[in-house]
Image 1 (cartoon, rainbow, N blue to C red):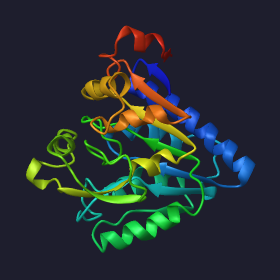
Image 2: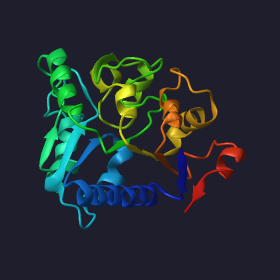
Image 3: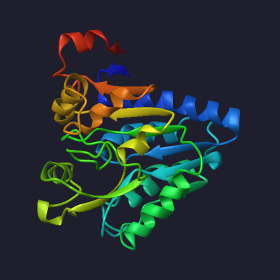
Length: 253
């Protein structure tokens, strides 16, 4: 895993977007199309803004898959990840083909349908984040590291649900759905490249655990250390608890 540390969250977003845009342009030039996985949440704001404004990307040749979504939450709700992706990525960029997770209908059927589309061809790059509890997508600890199912219906733990309140998506804990559809850990790891964007001080304990603790379902995002091509983007705040030995191995910009 390559770790890059920027001073601010905006610089982090810009640097991650530069790398992502290169991957998209080069893959389209080589294969005529590119398949991506996109994350949501407050941590992705700067990155997605910079990426959608990057020049030279033929977004009509981009096929996007949705990482996770709440069960039972309407698309009109401010916290809907479908709404988020439409407003912050799909429409601004003009993505030609996308697969959103509708958690309001027959969710098991949805998991099978989108999962089959996801596995129809390799994923070139996945954009992900890390939760305050160390989750990857909505795979809260202890995460399932073994299932081969592409999408799962998962129960959200209290720490995850409180993060959503803290980010302003819901007024209080009672409003946060207790279940979500999430791409599985093993499915995320099938992406040929992973770009992980993690700004903010509130993520610092999770970042430390992911990089310095044992690889374990108790720290779901620690599994990223097993992937051959991951770039982790941190800012001064999210990297603030890392030990010197970890910082010495990181690249600073």
